Length: 77
Image (cartoon, rainbow, N blue to C red; front, side, top):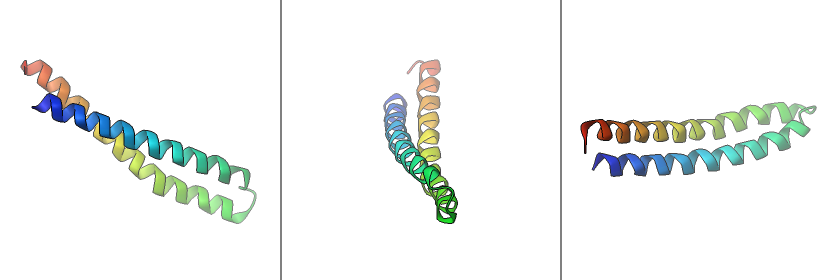
């Protein structure tokens, strides 16, 4: 059961990290070209805050799921 739950967490983590990471990267590039304006610098910080935290959460879910799968293998489940 922990292998299934771990795999599920890994899949959800990959999806969250990939989608939020790609979206954040897109907006970072768009605002980087307008960084010479004051709004551009402010918006880069907002993108990192709003997009970076869910991306880190997705990476955390992936790592948690990976540890569950590895633990189940070591226990022989």
